[in-house]
Image 1: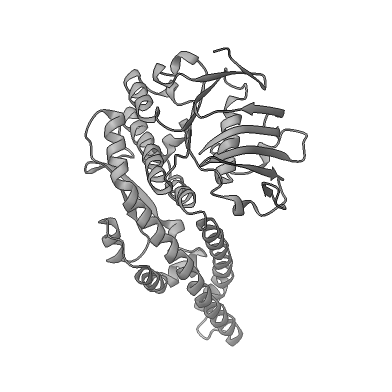
Image 2: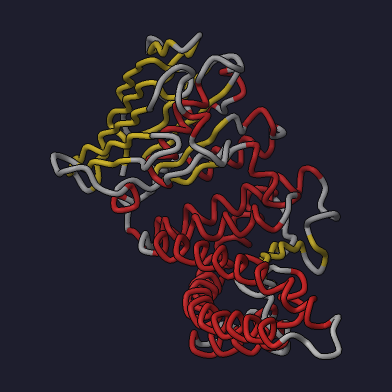
Length: 397
């Protein structure tokens, strides 16, 4: 799989730009703020429908423009497809694949797959649980695009359930302050709790399937992670990733030990967990159990990486996670995803630079951004583009 062409219109700093690409290594060189990262960000957006730099679509549209267009020619197994996304902040985005009519963006997921590593990935090790959940879910979608719909459904259910919990909270408090609670209050509360049970069922079904998929993914990823970390760091530190579940004990303990319970058991455990925390949820007005409350614990040996790993070890772990993702997708798909290294080499010492270069040199397509061309190891010599003030120019061979 590789990109043959990338076209942007009103995306970030670019009124319009066309870049012809080839398999192998392509490096975009330019000082900070010139627009080189915008190019690879657009490629990543085509693959994941999200940016590695911002959580909302608004900043992706050039100031003064109403929408942005990202278009690419994607080649896989010798066949080329045209992929286009129209980004409309505040409105529904649109997508088009080939000459077909416009469709929902998530329907084109899987057409292009990328693995992107950027300085922001240090948050995978040092940041909050949301960063690690996002990593796992995005890899899950890259592996099997159908999980995009499940993630969206789950987020909607949690939002609805939280709204219901907040509405029940004052009813419970009012009733608890009276010796003889008003019948109407009790009736309203009973009705709210009954409705809550309905949402419990929806949340357990969708959430249970998502947790099950995450656990299977983490189990498959783990061997690649340990190997990738050792190769990047030139050491053996037993890099591991385990799942911390919000389910009740002993199910959470079994999961933390690496077990993957059957999906039906996870759904049942979620129902039981809801029952155990019902009072706390109603008092606080928030859902306390489910995949949105879980975490991925990263460890070096017996110690958690967060708080104990050095700066270099944290970089190696973040790189290991991305390289493991690349190897997993390569094995699953039978073809390489496009590998994107955004301003990575400037953050690494010489040893890690060379080891990373050796590990990715055989990828079908590697897109690199760098402020200084000399930061990129010789093993990754290939085509080069100079990026300056939004203009992209190919350098002579």
